[in-house]
Amino acid sequence: MLDFWDILLIIIAFVFLLIAISIVWLKMKYVKDLKKIKESYQKIFPDAEINLFDRDSLYQLEIIEQSKKTIVKVIMSHPEYELIITNTFKWAVNDNPKGWSRKTKPVFINDSVAFDQYSENNIEITKIVLLYPGIKKVIRYLNESDTVILKPEEKVRNIQFLSYDNLEKFL
Image 1: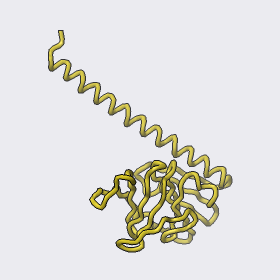
Image 2: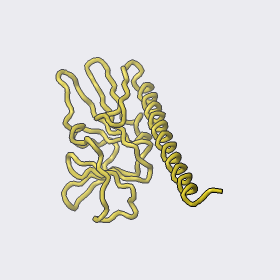
Image 3: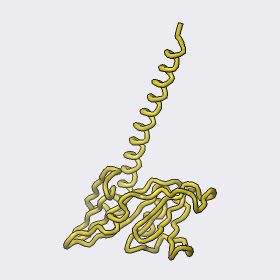
Image 4: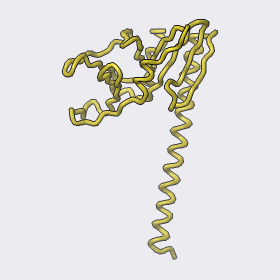
């Protein structure tokens, strides 16, 4: 018969197994989603060279056409989330728009400064932040108290912020 410690050990092992399975599943889903995004870009740019990079890279897709390069930072989002551009270099995801308050701790996007400042010599760079699969709205702070809702055709510091469903309309 199993005693308390044996049962506890089995439960802990089961929890760790569930965590490991969910991590592997999320990683596989991310790779699948990136491939879907790449296929969408290949339809739009059939003659371009398209390269994928991992989640921790400065950008996840690179589209190279002759003397032009487009870099795409993919931010996994949810259709009910909001992206907030707090200032020139800080972007945050609001994952609870209805419950947001000034005390809510923001989820900042890594490498937004480096992405904004990225450049290469002798090549034109187009920068896109792709919100996948979608986002409720993109909000940009004008100052400490005034905000505007960014339209898909508007750019901030020459960066296009697009929801996946608007991708083909603006490329």
